[in-house]
Amino acid sequence: MSETFELHHDLFGQLILTDRIGCEHVAVELKRAFPITAPQEGLSVLSREGHELAWITSLTNLTEQTRRALEDELALSEFMPEILRVCRVSGYATPCTWQVETDRGNTSLVLNAEDDIRRLATPALLIVDGRGIQFLITDPHALDATSRKILDRFL
Image (tube, rainbow, N blue to C red; front, top):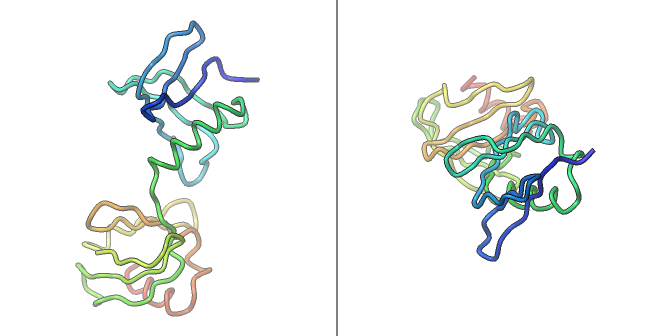
């Protein structure tokens, strides 16, 4: 079953929702209900003013064109690097700087407080750095021994 709307990008790169009666809503935003635990389910399409225009129960319910436009938009708007390795930290008291290897390359992050490491659905962790960037650790147990040891000092 397909949803009763279409999504596409205009010439300016804005996401457009065309509803079942043909009305176009320009510059809509996408928000996932559960971006980490169920990224393929529960997405809201919001107007510029923040009003919900459509609810997507599952990406599998969408046409190929609509799904591709949605996935392209999400790839641009969502930035959550996954930490693969913690190389070193500047100290074990916060605030401190972490040197990490992510799925998007090496970088550093500033951990302002231990509360900035949040437990998600077991075993995942979310680390929010001082600039507001969210880093994901999908499975801390899968990290190398050095990374686990550093992480354990903050948990």
